[in-house]
Amino acid sequence: MVAILKKDASQQQIDNLCSWFKDRGLGVHISKGESHTIIGLVGDTTRIDIDLLQGLDIIESVRRISEPYKSANRSFHPEDSVIDVGGVKIGGGHFAMIAGPCSVETRDQICAVAQAVKASGANILRGGAFKPRTSPYSFQGLQGEGIKLLEEAKKLTGLPIVTEVMDIHQLELFENVDLIQVGARNMQNFELLKELGRMERPILLKRGLANTIQELLMSAEYIMAGGNENVILCERGIRTYETATRNTLDLSAVPVLHEKTHLPVIVDPSHATGIARMVRPMSLAATAAGADGLMIEVHNDPKNALCDGAQSITPEQYDELARKVNCVREAIK
Image (cartoon, rainbow, N blue to C red; front, side, top):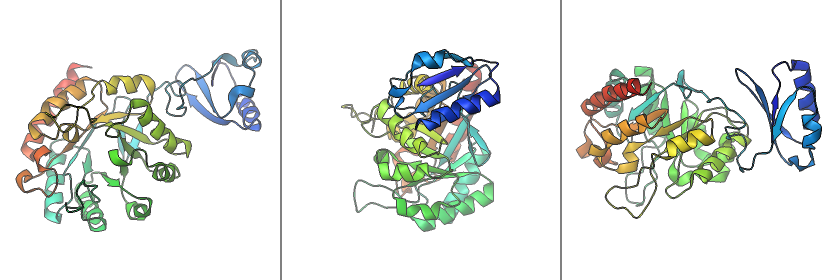
C-alpha cells in the first residue's frame, strides 16, 4: 500500500502518521520527491481502512500495490534511485562504464587493463577473484589473492572495484570492495541475499540464467527488505533455445525494469553473447534502450586469457567502443 501525501503536509503530521503505521506492525518507507511525499507500507495492510486514511487532512490518495515486491517497486519510489559506488553515481541520468577482465590473473595484467580502460573513460574496474565455473577442472580464480590485486589496481588508478561473491563466508575478504556482485547462479541464493541486506555496501545483482523479471525484482527485494537499498540490477542474457550466442540478450528487460522499479539497470553484453565481436553492437543497442551503464570484459591478451577470452575485447577495441557509446548517449538525450 502507498499513501501519497498533500504538498502542504508538515513534518510533524508525517511523523505522527508514520508512528501510527508502525504501531500497527507495518514497515514504513518514505520517499520524498520534488512534488510529493509518498509513504510505502510493507506488511499486512489488510487491517488498514483505506477510507479512514483517505479522510485524513494530509492524505491526497491511497492505493494498494498488487506486485509482491514493495521496496523495489517504482510506486514506492517514483523517482530514479541514484547509487553511489565509491564516488561514481549510477542511475538517474548517471552512466556507469564498468570494464576489466573476466578473471584477475596477475598483477601486471590487472594493472595494465585498469590503466587502459580508465584512459578510455571507464569509471569502475571489474575483475573476477572467485569464479563459478561449470567444470570443476576449470580455473577457479585467485580468490583472496585476486581481491588483493584488485585493491592494488584501485590504488594505482583510483577506480572503484567490483567483484563477485559466491558464499557468505567470503564476505570478510570484501571489506575494500566498492561494489559486491551477485552472479547469475546466485541470484536466488536467498541466505546470501539476506546477509547482503544487512550491509550498506552497494550490490550488483545479475539476472539468473532462466529467471523472469519478477524473480529478479524479488531477489532485489530480499536485499532491500534487510535494509540495504543500494541495489543495481544487471541484465546479462537468459538461456533460450537459440544456440548462435551463449545466451539471448533480453534488451526489452531494460525499459520493462525501468517501468517497474526505481533501481538502476545496467547491461553485460559480454556474458550475454559470449562472442567478442558481438559486444560492440549489443553495447550500443543497450545504451539506446536506456541502460544506466555497461559492464564489459576487457583483456590485454584475450587469446591467452584463463577465463572467457572468446568474449573479451582488447583495450584498443574498448577505447573505440567507449567513444561510440558516448555518441549514442548524446543522440538519445
